[in-house]
Image 1 (tube, rainbow, N blue to C red):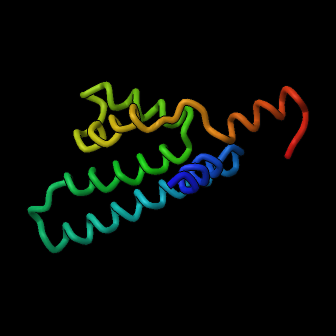
Image 2 (spheres, rainbow, N blue to C red; image 1 turned 120 degrees about the horizontal axis):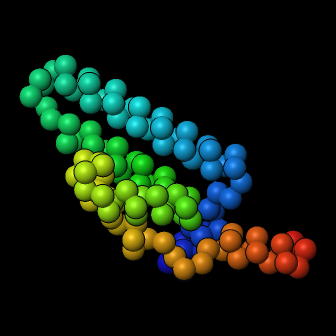
Length: 120
């Protein structure tokens, strides 16, 4: 369990390119969810958007929680306003309040490198 936690904390994308790749990956997943939804909708006309919202909220939340920091704060703020997003997003994003660790390994490493000018 401890190894899994350490791996999760040390694998946070810190560069702009890696963070952008995470956002693009999440966007692709959301696009895939729309394709699946409309394929199902063509067969079942009474299908509601609840499943689409739930799938999208899950994928977006997963990407934001992997990025931590300000991205996770955005999820927290979006969950607070009940009229901005559908209920599925609010429910999923409200979990962000319990997800952020106090300090992450990449942040600590970057801070020490800035102040002491040494890498591993």
